[in-house]
Image (cartoon, rainbow, N blue to C red):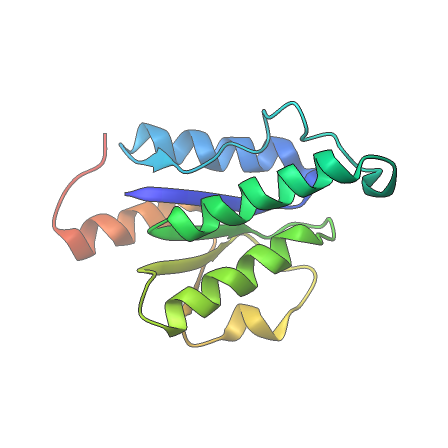
Amino acid sequence: MLIYVAGALADVETVRSVQTAVIRAGHELTLDWTRASDAALTDYESQPAAAASVASADLDAVLAAEAVLVVASEHEGRGMYVELGAALARASAGELEQVAVIGSIHHQSVFFYHPAVTRWVSVEEWLASLDRARGCRTA
């Protein structure tokens, strides 16, 4: 399954651990934004071309995914909510199989409770549910 993992920039290590679990389970990432050279880009106004490139790549990765995982954390995110919105638009149109929030929700969003969203304590729990639904085992 093609998966995009969204999360707060301040929580890159947790996002990477979720990505690692996804890959170990035999899935593929549409984009690993945590390792991109522009991942540390924070001053968007001074680098508009780089910011536009990052925004396009991230959105394209959400649009290519069969599942979008949003890593909830104690850190506030910004872009992850845009990615969640794009995923929900696709799910509402019947174009996306899975939208899941992973982890403890510290910063509430009404969209975490949209009917297309499932909420899981851990990525392992989500992967196990996916396996049960598909009738297969992860590595």
